[in-house]
Each structure stands twice: as structure tokens, then as C-alpha cells.
Length: 186
Length: 124
Image 1 (cartoon, rainbow over the protein chains, first blue to last red):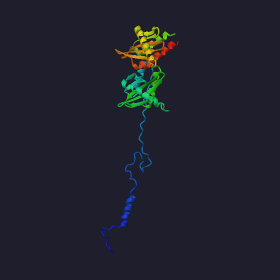
Image 2: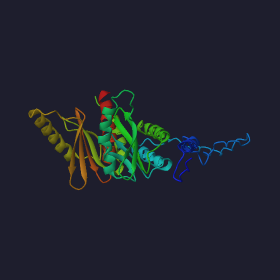
Image 3: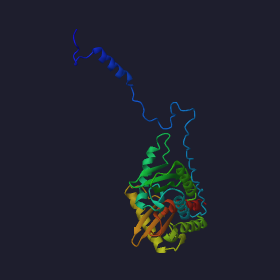
């Protein structure tokens, strides 16, 4: 009989130990923290209270623009004043489709003049079926210019605003309606 | 036959649009040089711009250029702008103070309205 050496290792024992170690290792690490909102395992059937959702803010009611004057200059001034009062902007303007300013507040004529090439470029865009392109927003570098366009027999007119962000779809619709009301009498 | 009442109404409308930016205007017959309506009328200007318009028209024709369209403008010293409208048999001159009148309103609102109204006056 041979005395086992201290350094002797039982191959079978080592194999079984290794097997036990690998068997207990789960393929994915156990989550230490349950996901937020998930029901805890083993907890009574009571569902975790869901946080109350904040009610969506009702959009601010914007009164329709009512034009009381027949004078084109008064009508345009009223449109710019209405826009500044009811839309999120620091400047507003009305221009023709050549980029000539008809009325403006809080924006330079140089900025308004870019409406000319902008609207010309959109003529090509409108040839694509299904593309309306009568409203949009343009990043000026420090501010966002949003505009809507209305066409009459005398040409196109553009109502634009300048602010930190582009106007919403709802605001665009309000501007279109107000511009349409105004240019009908020009 | 030209309805001068419609022309008077057109001049009144122009004054409302341009307000104190409009310094003077005349609507006159191109051949006779007879003024039919106006505000602060200027007979010398009528004679001058009839001649300038005829010269311009014939020069363009002789050079095979496109003929004169609806209007031409002159930027003059002292912040004055002269616009001459070609209504066919009639011509119209406007003297505008360009510090007080808005160019966009002049070109996109006042001139198209005037052209339409004078055309109606000549149809009658």
C-alpha cells in the first residue's frame, strides 16, 4: 500500500467539484434589483400602485383673428399683433413671395428677405405628390423661424415667426387661418 | 370710355394704403397727356414721364427687348421713389416717400390693386 502524497489529487474528486461549480453558475447573472414597476415575486396578489399620470395640459385657447378694417396696412398690422400676442415667438412678419416685408416686428428685413429664395425652392418640392410644403421651420443659427404661406390671385404671402422653437402643428393651422383671413381683403 | 369716378375711388384707395408715404399721383391719357384723376397733381411730371415712357418703350422695341410690362420704378435723391404704371392707354405716376411707405405694400398690394381698378374703369 502506498501512502498518498500530499500533492496527490484525486482526479474524480476534482472533476466532481468542477462540475458542481459549473452547475450552480446560472447562464445569466441574477438581477439584484427588480425592475421598477415589476411585481415582486412571492408578494401577495396586491398590484404595486402605479404612479398617477399627470393630466395632459389642455392647449391654450387662441381666439380667432377678426379683421375689422378694410385698409391693407391695418389688416397686416393686426395680423402681426395677433401673432405676437397668441403664439410662442419674439418676432413676427408678413412678406410677399419675393421676400419683401409688408409688416414686421422683432425681426430684421434681412431675415425676412430669405423668404423669397425659400419659397422659390419649395415650388420644386411641391411637385412631389402628397407634399404640401406650405408651412415649415428653418433654423437660423440662434433662433427658429416658422412660416406659413397663403396663395392668392395676386401672388403668395407668408406669415412667419421667430422664436426659440418651431411652432406646433396646431399653431401652424391657426396661423394659416389668420393669414388667409387677412390676405383675402388685400 | 373711361369711368373717372372709378379712377377717383382708386386714388382714394391708394391714399388709404400708402397714407403719408404717397406724396402725389396722377392718372393720365398717354396720347393727350390729359390728367383724369389724381392727388397733389403735377402737370410737369405728367409731361416728363409721358416722354420718358415713350422713349423707354421705343428704345426697348428697337433693341428687340421685351416690351414694357406693368410698371417701372426710379429711385431718386431725397428718399423719393417714382413709380410709373402702364395701364395701356393710360399712364399713372406715383411719387412716394420711401421712408414712410413700405416697399412690400407698394409692390404687392398697392400696385396690383391699382392695376385691377384702373382696368375696371377702362372696361366700363
